[in-house]
Amino acid sequence: MEQASANKKTVELFFQLFSSGQATEAFALVAPDVTWWVPESLPLVATMIGQVI
Image (cartoon, rainbow, N blue to C red; front, side):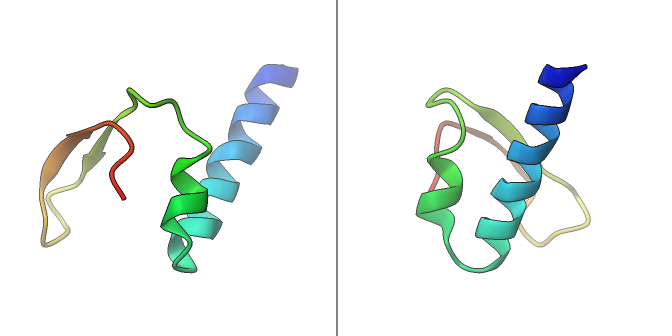
């Protein structure tokens, strides 16, 4: 349970940093080989691999 809580805090911090324009700091929190998705509801639909900044 502690790991899940730590992961949730990391994700919350990521989005807080990213949404405030601090993308470099946000992506420093994730693994270099991270895979993430941009949903179809946004203008740029994509699957991204790596720390895209």
